[in-house]
Image (cartoon, rainbow, N blue to C red; front, side, top):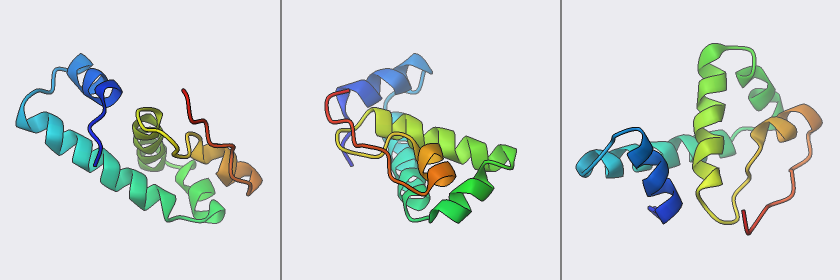
Length: 89
């Protein structure tokens, strides 16, 4: 897991420090992997519940702090097409 400077800053903004920062980052990465393993039908179903939307939000927030990951699972869910990977954002 890459605890990037951008991810550290986002975590610090919510007052998670020390070992909790690692734990939160690892949890976010795990959620990202779980969401990434779903097909567009399952992702579409995520959008119908609060929990599903929260899971999507966490996965997308994590991907914003990394390089080369899908940033928008909702586009994939709604179109069936992967969004373009944004490398320098």
